Length: 371
Length: 177
Image 1 (cartoon, helix red, strand yellow):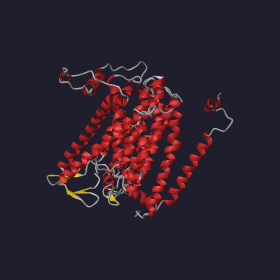
Image 2 (cartoon, helix red, strand yellow):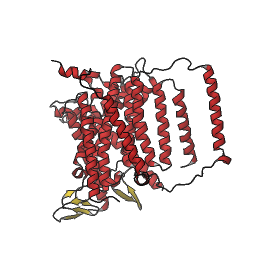
Image 3 (tube, chains in turn cyan, green):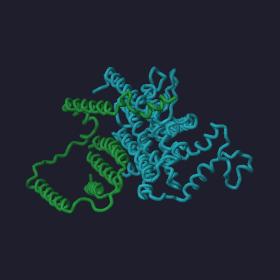
Image 4 (spheres, chains in turn brown, blue):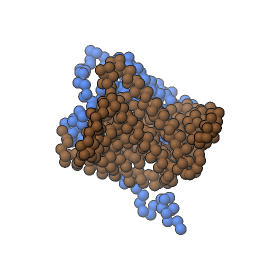
């Protein structure tokens, strides 16, 4: 009992720290990766005592982006404009961040390990209604953004808040439909069970990942997830050429940093969701609990503990790869127009999602997987 | 569920429900209402009615309250200042409330209590058991409700539709030279 409680607490903290660290990594990518994509140099100024420079190493901007940048933001003046609702203005950034952070705990990041005779599943919370929990917490993320826009007493902020709210509830629908078709495919709401269902192979070589069963749902969740995280090409709520900075125009210092952190954490969360539902979570192709069964009959035995550790590494690799992909999309595409965004959401993704659910239902019934 | 958790959540729900009617700013009232809905949802989940609890968060706290927020913004409701309502109205209102509470007390007081509480088996609120009930015992009611909702959706789209020839700002932009 005690060991389960302690392990649960450690796993929950681990997951939230992982989310924060991925956000920091995305902040680094935002500064330096974008420079790489756009053939610029990017942040390269701050060093500690110039040590690297004297040793002839190029400055990678790591201190700039991961230490100097956040420290700068958190030590700036925290300004609340006149006429603003002081209570809600302060509450809003945390209302935006909180739902994202508590969503991380249901993501399974590995199989299970044995410690002192106890079997410990590598997910912070193994909920039987995990997918419902996901949809519930993601739906609550709207309030922080909406109330930030409203409480700032600024027309641009309010417009940004309204845009963000409409965008997020529109794309939540497509997101929900994509997740519903995955749930129907694997017949469970438990995320760990969904990942377990993606083990094994078809035709001797193709891993049973969700992306090969539900390619349309993968694209739906990718697009809807990018829209939920409010990054370019879906950053209408903060489009700086029209709305100055959108819903967080009137934010400065630490609270603005919290909004930035929320965007990055949402991007990391979308990557984790895509990994869990479509890329097999912690599964590695051809790796069974006793070792690798390569197509063609070759076998390589791997100890059980190594299999678990390899699973966690595989999860992290997939998540980071998807984060990089989302970041590259963000630095490649121009911004949509607002009517294009709504048309894509309501006339493109939602009908496709409904069609996908219908097709999935037919296939599930036809293959006789209904009790 | 341990009693102190139940008492804590129940008190939180009552306090935030009071906040809904005491706050003068409509947005603050709305936040208090969200607080009430969330606490009740957590009570549902703690009592093993998992699906009902999560659906309450998804549908009510996540979607319908956003609609309320939009309506508050569109009507541009401001903070109420000064006293509200007539004194006589308040007087009779208090009497009616007192009568209602007395009536509730007499109905719910133990000697009159007709309801027998039974412990449901664990897992009665899971999605599987809910779906089992919905698609066997209550299939007709469920399907009729879904048709009713579909009719409402079609009706609202028909009402909101722009007829050709009406003044539509988007039309003007598209036909401008």
